Structures are given as structure tokens and as C-alpha cells.
Amino acid sequence: EFEGRVLVYHSAVAQFYAASDICGAGGMYQECICSNLNWHSEDACYATEVNANMCGMWGMVVGCVKLFFLFLSGGKKYPCALIKWLVLVDNAPDEVTGMWVVKP
Image (cartoon, rainbow, N blue to C red; front, side, top):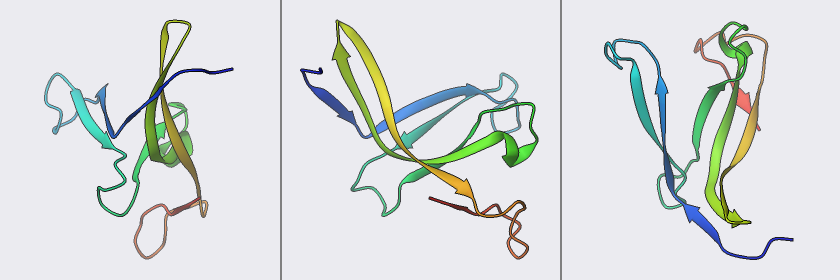
């Protein structure tokens, strides 16, 4: 049984290592992920690697951030994210756009 407050956040900063031209020689990069209902008309969608051994999209999942929140229980903080997961529409990128298509 949970008793207490739930704190809602409208953004989070993800920091990760990604050696590339954009990130520079050190490879550290950070990105602000927004989940503010008043910001644009769409949710922030991101691809996340779940299996480094699989090539391209096969090793990733795509989700849209609905909400960031935090709650306390037993004196410990639990940061959370509510995600709407998406699935691939086909086994290959779209023939016209060359992009992968996803749906809820």
C-alpha cells in the first residue's frame, strides 16, 4: 500500500556515451527528454537499445514518454517513467521513405 506524494517532472536529462562527430572526441552526450503536455502536440519518442548483439532496429525498442514521476517509499526515492511502447509495422523499412514505421 502506497501512501504519500507523487512528484511529476516534465523533463529529464539522459547522459550517455556515443563516440561520434556530434559528441566530439570524448563521446559523452546528453539530451533533454520532454513530457510536457503543453509542449507540441505529440509525445517525445525515442529508440532505446536493448540488445547490442542484434543489428539496427532489431536490437531496439521505440517508446513515447508520457510522464516522468518520482515517489518515496521507505525513505528511498524511486524515479519512474510511464512509456507507451511501439512495435514495428513491418520487417523492413518503408520502401518509399526508407524509414522504419512503428505503431502503438
